[in-house]
Length: 127
Image (cartoon, rainbow, N blue to C red; front, side):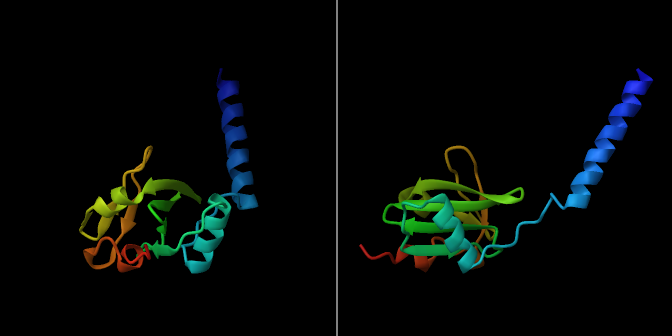
């Protein structure tokens, strides 16, 4: 049993060392306008949002297309994408510079500047 334990520890150490050497773990850069456009094209190829908003800390973004809001937020070393109805997003309340937006399976948190929600960029959508 001791031989199995030592063998497992050596194997796990080798895998951790290989992952560190190969640079498998990577940090996700904050979103900017170019990165948001790329992510939207990948995640929602059939949608063409007319208004976008990037959170103050760059860890998430919203893109509005009519009554649908495309939601992107950082999770691990990538971004998660969902769509939510505009009334749900507009009714959300920011508190202490944070906005918790409930999707069907998660509750991403966005940094909001000056606790102003929703931002003008998303509200002033041409009807």
